[in-house]
Image 1 (tube, rainbow, N blue to C red):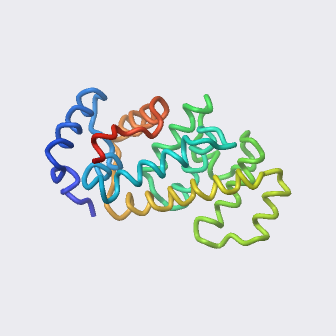
Image 2: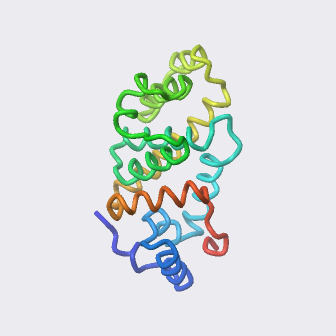
Length: 198
């Protein structure tokens, strides 16, 4: 069920910021941004730091590879909002299309073998079913411990935001809205003006 408070319950300063974002981007800010700006001290500030670290901080995974991991987790969690945005962001980062055909059968795709092995691991980790044996298989596939840890962090971030998206009724403004959000993420990363999160 969509919460109408996400449309009109923001502090005055953030209502102005949301209007400015809409004017400069050519469309409404997405629902993650609206949630972050609703009560930034409760959710926005901590969420922004965690997401920025997981998705754009130092990592052996490229930003585009992390977008593939996030898109995969979102697909597994049946979260169309996040799935649409992050498959598009991954496509922009990799310079080639990432879609359901890739995410449904990663082993048959042209993704790096470390990525496909990690997606098989995340298939179990999403539900909390991953075991030490799954980690051993990842290591045998050449995935480093640092890559495993970072993949688990991406999985955690998307498990959380997917549940918010599903329970609060996040929606995209069609394909245009998904591409607009994807282009913003690709261009700016996960930056949010610090003054808006006070």
